[in-house]
Image (cartoon, rainbow, N blue to C red; front, side):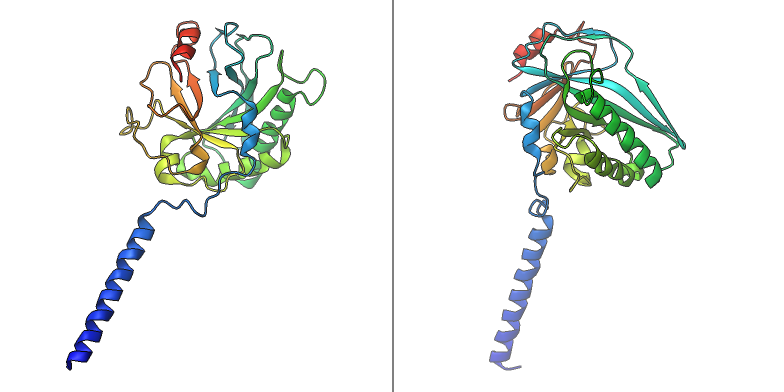
Length: 271
């Protein structure tokens, strides 16, 4: 082999090596560029920086500073039990201050569900019905007091249920009030590793940074790679909080209920 040929061979090998290194780096980078932030995310801006969850307990939130915080109130639970859809309202009374800004929350549970387009349509229609009712579509249809300004779905979808859940949310977005923000709760792993939520027609996904899956509990350094999760954080009153909350929309859950977990002191401690 001549010296010229050897030189050409070395140059080609170097170029090939450089290309492979560059390709490896591109593959290793988080896939952010093709996942745009939701275009309608400004809808969520009508709510305050802090939102307190009010769940199944009988709670008194009349001391809430309504200028600083909103309430995300569980209103109904939908259970897909095989082919049957069951709907149960929240039965315990929650006392709220006047003029509070509120978000209506619906919990979805499944028991040996039939994950078909038909059952997804039934769940989406029920969710849409609740969204219109809590928003105050007709006189007497809204919750007691102020109407709901936003709507949140809480569902710990298994991997096998994700396609079905996407179908539910896609149909819901077209049938609920178009000016009403749509929020969902999200397991922390959905926001860091799984990345299955890209393209969902929602305004935000709230990463639940408490009661996390085994192996992640207490770990607040989980990277948030999903843009839908980047603007908010879900925390609880009895677990340590991550340090980067100042620029997040904060949702806080009362581990023992707001009767025992001091509402006023909790709000003072938040950024």
